[in-house]
Length: 70
Image (cartoon, rainbow, N blue to C red; front, side, top):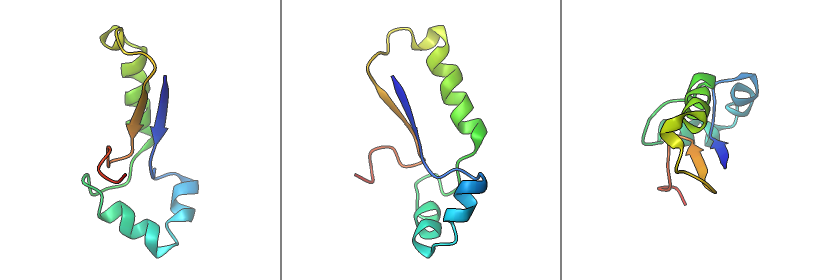
């Protein structure tokens, strides 16, 4: 199991946002906002919970896009 985060509002993400393409990518995502460390932590909480007990061998995208950008 893995978790793949997208653009997150962290020091590294803010540094990358200096590039116009990154800023446009975030603005045009279906969610329309930056991710946060809490978004990633919530996904981790779910994966570690009993609610995810039948999920295995999956990559959980936490990027605000899902599969629509592939």
